[in-house]
Length: 95
Image 1 (cartoon, rainbow, N blue to C red):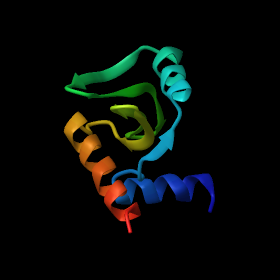
Image 2: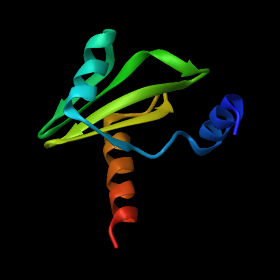
Image 3: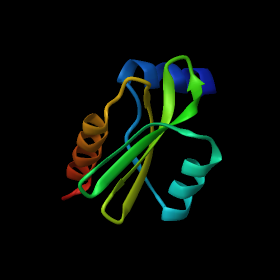
């Protein structure tokens, strides 16, 4: 799949599934550029990297407890929607 086709598919699907990342990767992404939409609630947080991937798609990182995730999503994605995507992905992976 070409890069353009990948982003076109992401646009159609409103983003990609969250992928687990390390704590180190989370902090690298947080410190590389000033974060946008950084939100913390209870034992979770998420932020958007201000440099876009393409059009309306941005990299988001999230932490829930001691677990860290990265995903490409539309700019207007909320913290709650990010947490829901992670929960849905974890349900799919649980036998």
